[in-house]
Image 1 (spheres, rainbow, N blue to C red):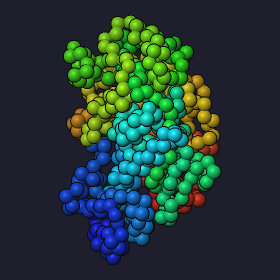
Image 2: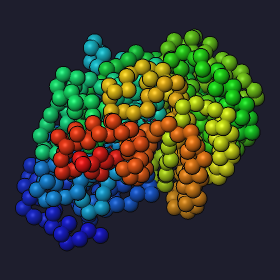
Image 3: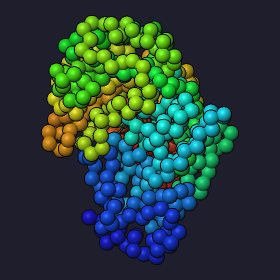
Image 4: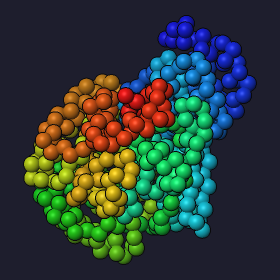
Length: 469
Ligand code: FAD
């Protein structure tokens, strides 16, 4: 329940002024849309803001920021609503919601695309694939482009083309003062450095301009499955095979109980499996040759890897991570798949109980590694191949969820001696220590200096926060 002080925020003259000027929708407790608009992807988050300002454009974002300042309200910023710890919704404050801002403009000659802050990954792919181009992004189409880009953006195309934020050419940002500024390599370059990895700490990004890359529309892609009892041999084979593959191929290893999906043979449903999910960002024939040794290894339980439209491939993981389930994620990076890491991985994967829970490992390296570490605020490009590990606990609702969460924490603890870094977009609410680890001391200090310049009062603090001091 909101307090009377909080309710007065939306009953006073400042609110009347906002309402007069606002082009989008202002949603308050009791309005028909309120429950739908305060819900985010992670069903375990249940928060009640006093106002959800659903912005139609930049003018609305500016008006909402100024209103929040005038009323002294806490602010959450929402784009795709996929923050694992629920940082895009708050209790008793204002949500500045960009999800109605869906403009996308592709320039096929210049090979660039502009996208507004409310665009989802699948929406961007649909527009860019119409021209046989893509921005490398994440692996679930209903994820928000804004939060993903500002944190980094790992996905199926990263080894060939880099992170999402490596494609950024320019951004429009509404600052804590309610001013619109542009940032690029030539304009406000330090801010441009900071938004490429520093999340929503410096302002609300209303528009992104990206470089485009050629892709598809047909690519060799999809998972190859083995029974989990074969996982130790599969992983050792994978580790050797992956050492020499070209950057065109990005793979994700996934451990879980096979979903009861029509695309998977019924005898595998709910059986523990390991899958290697491939995406080859290059010609089909070359891709088929590269993935052949994997497809021929051991006793393959099911093979879905072959030529297909990139758009279909991008949507493949959507049903396994739907809106509304309860989720918890523990993430870390490891430098190598050593025998010890493999043994821990297999041991804990065999303990997965819920058919919703999964354990993906993203193979990074390639183009991700070729950007110099100091060029952006993103950390963890380190030498070698580098694996990003996510223990994703999931359940239909709160029933049995604590045990799933415990499973994720135990796996993370067991891998602790091998952690090299952590990716901010997969952090839960892990406090300043987690954020410092994610950026490393030098980058954290530089980000703090930038925060002091753009947001000295920490107006934007519901994020993986870099406090000004
Ligand atoms: P939101 O919840 O709307 O926002 C997340 C954070 O970003 C909040 O702190 C918010 O304040 C801030 N923010 C949002 N919009 C803006 C803006 N316009 N300006 C300033 N700050 C803003 N990450 C990957 O790299 N690769 C993946 O493949 C991947 N897959 C995922 C799949 C799922 C199902 C989920 C839930 C997450 C995935 N992620 C992935 C992590 C994802 O990148 C982060 O959760 C990201 O923050 C989501 O962005 P969003 O806009 O949807 O989130």
